[in-house]
Length: 383
Figure 1 (cartoon, rainbow, N blue to C red):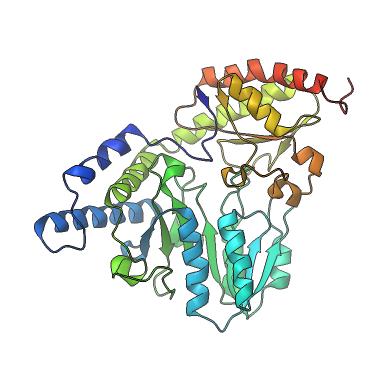
Figure 2 (spheres, rainbow, N blue to C red):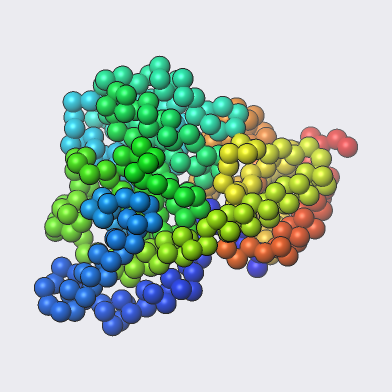
């Protein structure tokens, strides 16, 4: 199996699994219980919180555990909006993950003016557009750290400065960057940051929202007093422990892993670009995630490429896993100005910890033949 869909989900690292095991059947007590087993579970949660805080250079009391990135995004935007109703404008980018985009659109039902920021052909947000639209009525600016489909990294420090000039809160969905890039929460200017464990070799079903100290936000879930009264529900202790272990492993392996993945990704692009005519790179050629390669193979349907690669034991995607099943072309690529017929031909390879040189060589060997076969059946392709 050659798995090249790490941006959709990454397998849990064996060390993560080992760290989690005791909290399923040995240290299984409820962290809210005051007896000794319960307090041991609580200690595990708080120790994990400290690890995550150190990893992102933030305060321990700024870390709130969630069920993943989607909940963290919803908690940031809705939680802020429902606690501060005087400001009525929300700004987000046209290439946000659906967890942000659809949450922002939902807030329009409550009287919020919702504005989508356009991007250029590389997927970089238009800073001048933000400067033009932002004002003293803006509650939050939510721009992702890096795009999950094309890997383009956004200028978040500059965006934070623009937001703060008008007293707005800056939130970033960093689901695709935590564990892949070094993030300094204190120095970045970020006010709220969302992350998810399963994107960097932690377990599914756990994530976190980092919230700058002093920022008020309402809970989404009402019930118990967990997470400082901001996220009711018994803590997912095994998941939280696994998330912390994933942070420790990422810190230990960076930047060597980033360099290794960049070299593999660059070789993959260089070789297929030289062997397959009429393909294009989607995303920024330089300011992009080291593990991500999104291309369009003209005159071929992306889904057909995926199925043929799948038959060869190579597993990639056409874009976001949250958009799978849709027959529409990627909204991210359309927002970048890529024609619909070219967007339909997109293919995303996302590399990870267990991607080796032999995997890349196999793709280079197999993909040109698949493209040639599919183009031979296409009435649009002419040699």
